[in-house]
Length: 179
Image 1 (cartoon, rainbow, N blue to C red):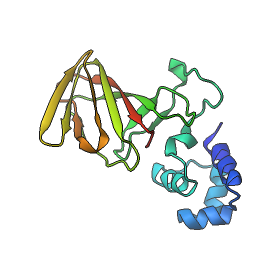
Image 2 (cartoon, rainbow, N blue to C red):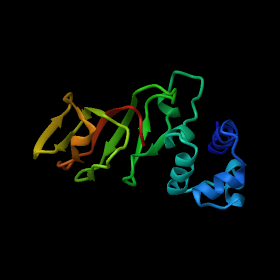
Image 3 (cartoon, rainbow, N blue to C red):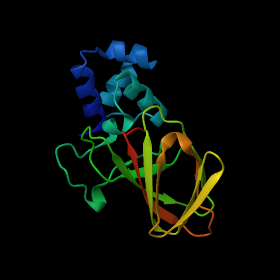
Image 4 (cartoon, rainbow, N blue to C red):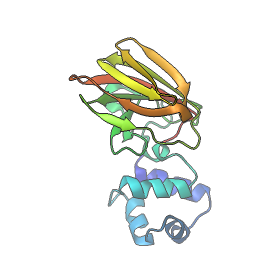
């Protein structure tokens, strides 16, 4: 399902007019009409405002695997990694479940400061290749290498970094889902 179709479906479920959605999201109804008809692609910032008004997580508008529990490697959906300007890849279709796993590739030397999540309570990371550094509150810093995992309360995260000169890949899971 396209972003436009998902947006229209959710707007109709809520009984909202295009004008009501436009007013609340601070966008024009003409722009939203073009989005719903897949004539334009909204920025992530605009899509985030739309998702907020529609009371759904952003990734629900981006997921294209509705009804199919399998996500094949070549069919994964890239979504914004919280509010960092980088992307992650969904490893599961959105099903309104309580966890959301991502696959992330992190360039050598890349650093991502924590984004405070309103709903997420727990995060879990598993390093597939390379190494990442997780900094938590109280100056706790953990270097995780291939095969290592960490589980913590989301509110404690300060930064995720790749301190090495090699690319790192990892899986991150958060619960409940939020982007």
